[in-house]
Length: 89
Length: 452
Image (cartoon, rainbow over all chains, first blue to last red; front, side, top):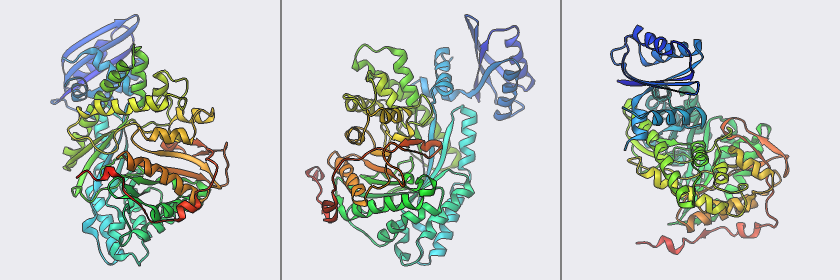
């Protein structure tokens, strides 16, 4: 199962590392990363394979929420199908 | 790989523009619960609903978590109870309402619909008794919703039922007058009622439906308004195209949720109802969409045309996005649930006559209108008859959900709280239709009914 992890917030040092460390800790394999910084707003989107993760969807979501709160970022973890169905025919 | 802008667009729709799935409604047939002993029938109903829907709320929450889409309501609709009550109508029929309420409580759903009767052509066993019990049923239960179909394009309008419903609406408001007359907000009188509507208060599980189905109602007025605001359309065709594209995306999300819910609950997927259903939340208003199209205020001249465009474009956009579209599908205009409508009423731009015109081109009828408490039952019947005539002649669903504000007059306000919102008491037109309503009988079906 693939999930899309989006990270939005004010740019600061080490965002990518913090999020990817949290993912690695629970065995989430990051497949693709794109990121952009517009003015000082940071937007990162990761496509991750979570089928072999050591935690379930809810726990992963909570873990990343915590990382988000600690770093003043908004992190969403969503099943990729939502984007596929909304934006592809 | 997915496009970054698409991902951010979806997240923005959910976070900032109130995109949500308004309801997952499980339709359950109660035909096999019929029993001449009312207590045994009630036990069967409670058991069947609780067995079929035991995982409904949890499944909804799981989908919300995984897909990040808020699913606001999980609800249940059942076979019209008048059909079940036919064999035990001499007994205390109210027990059915209590059994439904108990099931809703056990399961944690917020509404259960189907305390209903279908009497467009006449009354069958159980219909009279059920309609007479509605005021008390809605006052002693919390989550039960009731609806009565009094007309259709095929059958005409049952004016005896129209007369009964005027009294029923007023009595229901009176019995719940200590709680903002909220009973009347859970009672809908339909013409051309649909059998697979997932939205309350008018949902029931039609007799032509399967034993159990999942119907999903999507929403998203805020998303449509925001899309129009950002786009700066050059002409009205562009507006229609943009609404279509947005409705497509919203409906695709609803379709995904419906498929997921259906497979996780092992229940067949029924339909997606692609309706723009407003909520009292700021920015989630159908009136604001119309204003975004260029109206100074909802209710001014031009409103009916703008609403006609919106209603049509929503359907055209949504219909390709889902394998089965049904329910009411279109734009809703419930006054008390829509901040833009409330503002328009307060400023005197929107009144009952304009709303009546609007109902000729959108998917429902006079919805969540608070009217003066001294209204006579005959006047409520006349309002119902007018709406039913619009539905009957135009081969569309129309409905009346008016709330007589007992003890209040025009200019006051009732506050229902939650999704039902709050509404100013709206003045009605002058004159009485008492003699007309008391004629009773059947208003003949129009020529449109002779399609065969």
